Image (cartoon, rainbow, N blue to C red):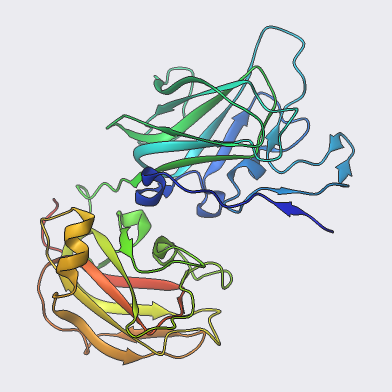
Length: 340
């Protein structure tokens, strides 16, 4: 069936720095809603762009790609509670009303809370993250969140009813290392352990943060893939570890990349107290090699132990994709020296 896809938009800086913590593919979930008559809750957390199928209807009316409530006939309003994929420090939100043109909410607001265990209940204290803001139809509405609190759940209010195509909550995942056994080896670059993308040369088909996700990639779109390079040099990305540590094992997975995997890769690394992106990009060119150039093959997991240089504690890596192509996952297994 023919469909129209929501066009790409220029993202604000917070959406490039943070990851979407309300990503349903990472197990973010809508726990409760006041109503979902026209379109179910789970569609709102789909990480893919919203779609519109012109001739598609279901038993309740027009099929819409998002969460949509019925028309209210009282003085209340609709809301839902979302458990984020990872608790974290929130940077901003996108209230996306793509394709909701005559049925969007006139306004929305956002609250948050932190639950170390379990789910929010009637005793939970919610803090305001975004005061009520005006919405328009078929638009992205980006708003910065000014809060240093760790948030595990958000409550979205729409005033009074209507449809939200996507709710994207951008932030930095939080990981509690205080109670972990530091004698154990962890994937220090994983999203769930606080790993994040910093900068990259190109991300035409997918951003580097994709390679930090759990599990194996589900398809070729679930990874970091660059355009075809037509000039000398190679593509690269800079990544920050969740905690600085000593790397003992490296895994590079080219799952689903068969005619477009990099010919080779290498990783440079260093312990950096500098966090400014522009400075890290320049400094990374001179970092020593954690692992020198290694050949890659299609659709395979490549593991390395003996090839790893003994650099000691590192906080950042520069992954070089030589000369270009797609990588599905990166794993950097190692030990944390001390929690920072």
